[in-house]
Image (cartoon, rainbow, N blue to C red; front, side):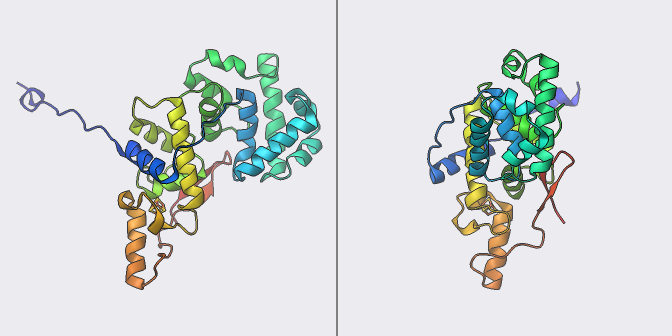
Length: 268
Ligand code: SF4
């Protein structure tokens, strides 16, 4: 008789950390306004422009692009200088103008017309691989397109806020966006729909923008403090030094940018 039969394996405990975090954040920030999904191409353009740029600024730039060019075909056919001028309010407009024009031209060449609606026929992994062939498109952008757009597939969009928060919470130590998403997806309850994952992303982003900020996390006010090793350590150090809003710890992760322009965290 082998060991497996003598000592039958206990089923692994389900990892309910994300569900718990989700409930606490909902309790703190309240219900999130449901998104009205855009078509995949509009979401693609938004997401390509959004890295390291404030959400409201990116929305404003996309609104401006619609007004100025009328159609995405006109945007594709505009000169690089025109595109760069139209998106000058986002970060790295020069680089993003090149990526945007090349991507729009690439989509047209491969599909025949400028649309991403046809992706609805593909499996999620195939959609993401298809999108990531274009310059500047990494896992963050492909996840945003499949999850936030009318495609509405299951994915976690790991932006710089998501990376920072999940690393501080000890959910995903020292990983890039792709690895972080893979690890998070293993913890996502099977019952979570694409809409629930979108809501989770919104809650984590709100936390990252308001409390778990890069340089000055407000751990004393955070609903996740009890679960957060980084926050608890920070608070303990603050108590020892008499600093009520604890100082940055010496192992504060810092943001680096990978070769696709996606922000990722790395300890010094
Ligand atoms: S306790 Fe502090 S470090 Fe942890 S998630 Fe909250 S704000 Fe971020």
